[in-house]
Length: 340
Ligand SMILES: C[S@@+](CC[C@H](N)C(=O)[O-])C[C@H]1O[C@@H](n2cnc3c(N)ncnc32)[C@H](O)[C@@H]1O
Image 1 (cartoon, protein in one colour):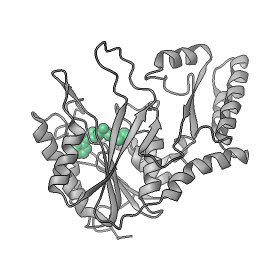
Image 2: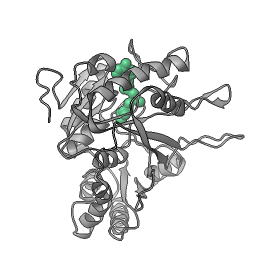
Image 3: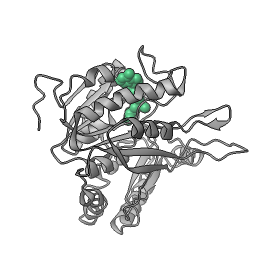
Image 4: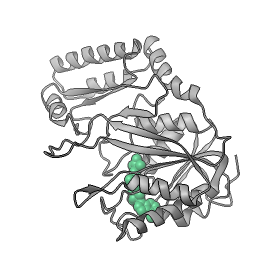
């Protein structure tokens, strides 16, 4: 690992404009850049210099390209740069923002695009459009610098195997939820039902029918939201809990199915799902590697990287998010059970 001591130290999360801060990182010292920049004209992050509200799409793409070019410089020869972007409707038409960005990257940067991994949101924001369908996918573009890129399919697939093994061995899977059920304000009857359903879902993981799950308990977790929100919110209200099943990939397809997440007490509007981040870190970075997120937001990338034994660097222009990211990364115990 390169010594960053005279530059930006590894295992740090800093406030600043990503383009400026990236300049403090030495060449070829980061193994994986994994990030989700602000989407085009979606929200105001409330800080001067924030990316996202440029007057034109071209300007927005140009700004992202400058950041991308710095990412290429600091990337090891066997590294990956993964950018996740969302699209935008304007005057009733999709702008194809992610693909315009990816095309601009391929035209101007010395990288190849080896996959567009599609995140399928199992609980997209529930809307009733009468003349179009609800969008429930987002691309993660996986760019590399050379043919010699690091790739650990075994670790990626092992995430599922390990979850099953842990369940089989009567391991820790779900233990945290058991104690949360006890601590909750659910009635004794509701607690008993919650324990029963928890056992059932652990069995499903054990049998390999699902890759993992999340449980949300009333008063402990943020209220459920998303496509099945009506149903889930009602379950949380009436039963006191809801269980979200994660259907993992047993084949090496370029698809990751996972729910959108909210985290209690986090005011960040656009959080990466920890499961997706864990999969990509395992697949694309070596165990002692450095993972960087130049738009770290609520700290999902840095927290999961630390949990998985990687070094990390996070950058965000908003000091409140940076403070939160530091806490979340420090306190990795709060990460979901399905992150190892
Ligand atoms: C889509 S969010 C990232 C969310 C993150 N993936 C997570 O899991 O929470 C984009 C972030 O970029 C930050 N941002 C916007 N402009 C920036 C800039 N010029 N430099 C650094 N960060 C910036 C925003 O404050 C916001 O937190």
